[in-house]
Length: 197
Image (cartoon, rainbow, N blue to C red; front, side, top):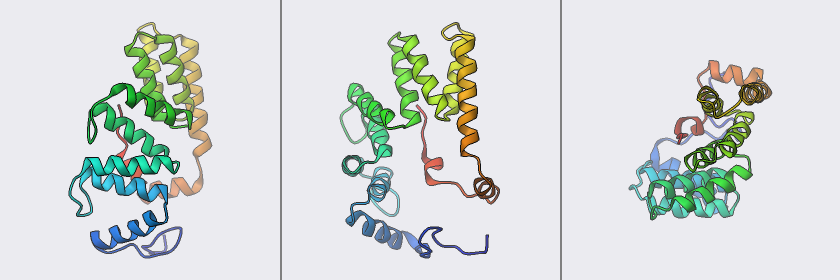
């Protein structure tokens, strides 16, 4: 707000160019920062920051990030195995990654588990997954339960509970600072790259 264009946490100026950005990331990677390792994996996977696209290298980095505690890397590994990008396609393994991440609180992975159960015909279990995800603040699950209600796979009470849970989750995340950041058009990188299943 004061015209400062540097890191909000450490006040380090943002690097100029891809090489400087990559150097900054690699400094954190060398210190075994799981977020930096995850981020570097993203850059290799998609071929950004001047790096040649290398999905296998991205998967390797995500695997290392998972070992250090990154649930976002679990999600991305699930997607990689689901689509067969950088690894041999293995949907069973994909949903194992989604399940691990969901157990650690990743709402979109919980949502994906719901779709997996729905495809298998386990509609009651699918609705339970969507309910949990909705209560974590994932709007896609609310919409899915709404559809399930319309076609008779969820009850009116389940839809109402999911909607209330979603609204409570959103209310818990509201703050003056977040509203101000939205007004100033600041968004997280995660918001820009999140991919729905």
